[in-house]
Each structure stands twice: as C-alpha cells, then as structure tokens.
Length: 487
RNA sequence: GGCGCCAUCGUCUAGAGGCCCAGGACGCCGCCCUUUCAAGGCGGAGAUCGCGGGUUCGAAUCCCGCUGGCGCUACCA
Image 1 (cartoon, chains in turn yellow, cyan):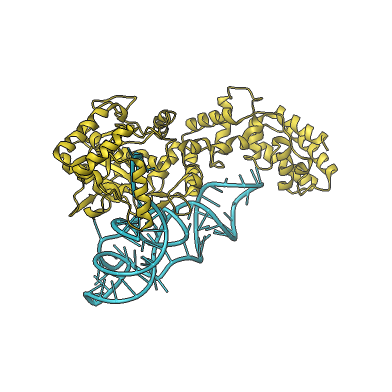
Image 2: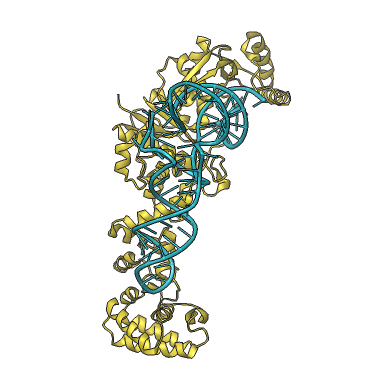
C-alpha cells in the first residue's frame, strides 16, 4: 500500500507556521515512503472564508519546496481537491448515517443552543447538547418551530451514551475515552456544508489517505472521528497527532507572539532551506547531535517514531543562527544571485537596476559570513553601489582622531598619495597602509578606521582592503579626497 | 467545571534499567585569532532529569499519586 498524506488547511487566513510544520511532516512521510503528498482545501466555513488566502497556501508550500502530487491547481485522480466542490458526497454520507440510525436531524435554534450552553456553564456543568431532537417527539416539535421561522436543520451524530472508545495514535499511543462525555456533535451544518469532522473523513476515504497528521489540539475530537469511521465502516487511517508549536510564553503560537506567517519570515530575510530545517526539527530529531540536515537526509531518515510528544517553543534565535549557517554554506553562484536579488529589492531607487552580477559575485564571499538575514546584506555593501556616502564628521574622526581633525586630514592626504602609488591589490594596499601608519606614528587600527569611514562611510564593513580592491582605485582616491576636504 | 495530553539545562533536544552524579545545539560569559564587524577555534556557567511514593541489586528511563503547563469543551477548523 502506498503512503498517501495530505495537507488540508482551511483558507481562512495566511498560512500559519504551526500548520506548515505539519505540512512538512506530511511531505516528509510521503517522500520517505515514496508515496504521495496531497493538498486539499477545506473551505467549509463560509463565514471565515478568505479567498485571498487560497493562492497564499500554494505559494507558501512552493516557497518551502513542498511540492504536492495532487491538489486544486495541479489536479489528480481523486479531485476535486476543494471541499466546497464535493458537497454531495458529505450529504450522501450524512444520509447514510441518518438511514442507519447513527445520526438525526436537529432543528434547535442557535438561540436555544446558546441559552442552553450559558445555563450549563453557570451551573458548572459540562456544556453539552441536551439531545432534545434525538427523540422523535422532540424533533417533531422543534421542526414545527423551525419551519415557522424558516430555519433549516443540522445533522448530528447519535453518540452511544455508554461505553468507551480507544484511539490508537502513532505518536501518543492509546487513549481511551468515555463515550458519555462525548456530545452529539454536528456533522452537517444548516447551510449544507459539513463540519470538519465529517468532511475530512469522507474525503480521506475517497482520496485513499493512509496517514493523518494534525495538531495535538485535535486529540480530544478524535473519538468523534473514530465513531464516524466505525459507523461508515471505513478503515481508519493512521492517526498521528503532533505536539503543538508554542510561543515564548508557553501558549499556542499565535499572532501576538510575533510573526506566524511564513511570508513575514521570508520578507525578513529568512531562507526557505533554513525555515524547512528549523521547522522540521520542532518535535523531530535525527539523533543526539545533528542540527543542519539536508532535505535528502530528512527524507531518508524521517519516521513517525522519532517525533516527540511534548510541545515546543518556537525559538527564533536558533532559526536565525540556522539561517546564517545556510547562507555560509550555500554554493557561491547561488549565493551571488540571491544577494543580487536582495540588493535589487533593498538598495535605494537611485541605484541603477539590474544590479551588476559580476560585482556581487566578488562582494558575496566578503560578506556571507557576516550576514544572518538577507535583510542585512544591503547594509554591508551599499557603498559599492553608490558614491553618495553620508557620514558624520564625528564618525570619520573616530576615537583616535577625535580632537585632532588636522592630523586626520593630513593622514588622509598621505593615504591617498600612498594608495595612488600602490599596486591595486588588497595585500599591497594593506602593506602600504601599515607602512604609512608606522611612518606617521599612528596605530594601524586607528588609521584603518579612518580609511574605512572615508572609503565606505560606515564603521562596520567587510574587510577594508579587499573592499578597496573591488571598489577600484579611482573611486577610492576620490572618496579619500572628499573626506580630507571635509575636515 | 468536565475530558484529554504533556513534563530532561532559559529554549530545542539525546536518552527506550546499569554506557548518564545526564550528551549535543541555540543563547549567554571568557580566551584565542583579528584592520571594524562577523565567522572560526578553545573553554565556562547552566538540568539534584517537576514533586512524593513504590518496583529493582540498580531508574531520567517501569508503576501509582500529586503538582504544574497546555489543549479541547461552536452549525471554527
């Protein structure tokens, strides 16, 4: 039997990082077994539906490199892959359950249900449907009221009131639930759409899904699902509940903890490879030491039995570190192209596009080990692209020349002269400047700082002489003169 | 309130009875390297394995209780 997993988000907003972690596990499990990974849209909540989020879902998967074999935009043998286009199948399942006596129509108004719940809460009782419509008597009466008000019914599952049901979870092992605590939950809403419970089960069966991976928060609804599988005589897929991803305060990761959208991370300069690696390591590990893991290694080694049970706090500092690792280890040509694209986005509009690829290719090796986030790239190398340096005189002088602007000016003139005569390689430049520092009785470091400011306009830069070599003699001499003249 | 899940350094984790008075990573601190900033190297602090009982010659690992955290408790997923 081939393994088939699916990522089945509800298009109600921008894809959440916690859900994407589940998608990564789904993807990994399918690829590990040479099976299929499927995308299905669960758009049954018509009130929260957000059409804009639909393209964002596939965009986020594509960004992370989670290619799916079947889905709304790629088709497949079990389509359509959008629940709103499969309404008939849920109705049919509900009808079957109704006919078998495993379900019943409920005509109660939401006003009555709300009142009931409020009262039960007040009495500190567990909120639960009182089953008024479960008996034909109650149903007939409720139906008359509903029809008078022009309301439709819902279909509820007829939960047995005694007994237990056991969930065999691939990660959490067995948990047994008392059926008496399980409500007669709604499967089909009055608008004709199924709730999650019915919808996913009918679709997974039709799409031959073998493994269901989902957040831990579903574990308490699992007994309902078990009841439906049983009533419908479906072989349940492997159920694997995943530990939650938490925010720094220990509560389920949400907007208030910061970014929960992958796009926010992408825009902040995080690489998809790093994001993938990091997310895959939330709740799963390869061994006791490996942190940086390639996609191929993940696919080769990913198994459900190495998923931990305990929830994990999303540690953005580690993500950032990992991002730096990926930047440092990336092949040079890819890195240069990535940096070039980043610069095209981040450099001021006054800098001509497209950015010179050859120039970036020379700069990239100098800054790659300094950069953790792509958004830092421009700050390290903008002076290569614009001659419009603006710096404060105070910074130019620095600590060493703070009270001696005249000395600084004289030094800069000597620097320009020495540079003009030097062979234009970083080694020769460094040798010349060290000799000059000696000559004028300055510390090499102090002189270098002065030159750095004059040539780059910044206090923190890639290695000075390598930068000068790339900048070229003319631009460097011009900048040195401008700096000298400013004093 | 009810039901459920979980519990190893601040954080992510290794650990499936002796290899563990607990290993790795991020972060933090110090030193080295060094023209700035990084990167890198070396070292350090940091967990009486939530608490209390068992079982066992021996427990982070098994059992029970407690406590704590989290989740669910919708015609949302």
